[in-house]
Structures are given as structure tokens and as C-alpha cells.
Amino acid sequence: MRVVLQRVKEASISIDGAPAQSIGPGLVLLFGVREGDTPDLIPKLAKKCANMRIFSDDEGRMNLSAVQLGYSALAASNFTLYANTDKGMRPSFTRAAAPELAEPMWEQFAAELEQQGLKEVVRGRFGADMQISLVNDGPVTLVVDTDDWGH
Image (tube, rainbow, N blue to C red):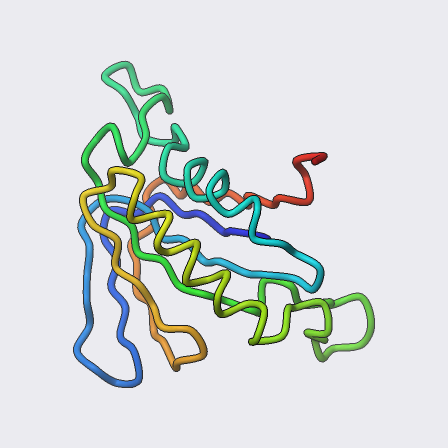
């Protein structure tokens, strides 16, 4: 699984043209699942994302988490995180998990995020047409990839 995590001053999401839902300061999390991923790491991934110390303390050091500050998160599924761009100019998405695997894992990830103590979690909807607007803070953008964990 892979999450692109962004520290934001604010963000909003519109799903299938509906009015946008928004958050103030916090996190935007784009979540992707590849073929072969299993749900056993989802609780750890959600905890790591919500508690990542990427917000500045009083001394200007990235030392505080969204949970510690009472911030929110906006989370959306995003199969394009597993695009293969090795050949040609058109990305291939064969490494992305099939919807039958990815959707329940997305739902579990979002539910686990909601248990982490964030102020709120605004969710995208799996497979929907979503537009996300954000003001990136810093910018601070990280990729959290469970393949890097050496499990």
C-alpha cells in the first residue's frame, strides 16, 4: 500500500459534482493498493499517517502530529499511485489492485483513520469522480509505502 501524505492549511473534496466538504489545517491522504497487498498492515499505516510528526512546534521543528494538534484529515482512494511509467508515454495501471481487493482495503483504511484521534476525517468515495483542492503547507509531501517497511 502507498499513501501520499500532504500537510495542508486547508483542503476540500467534491464527489461526483456534489457540494464540497472541507477541512482546515491537517492532512490530505491519497491511498493506493497494489496487487498482492494484504489488509494486515492497514492499522499500522493509518496510525503512522495520523501521527506523523510533520507539523512545526514552537521552535519551528517538525515535531508535532495532526492528532496532537487536533487537526483533520481528508482521505481519498487513488489507484494511480501504482502507475507504471517505465515504457512509453502512457502509464500502465496493471500493478494497481483490482477493485474487489482495493475497495474493502480503502474502507478499512478510512475506518482505521477515524479511530486515530483526528478532529475529523473527510472521506472520498471509492471509484468516484473526485476533485480535491488544497493549500499545501510548506510544501510538505511524503510518500509512505508499506513495501519499504521490510515486513
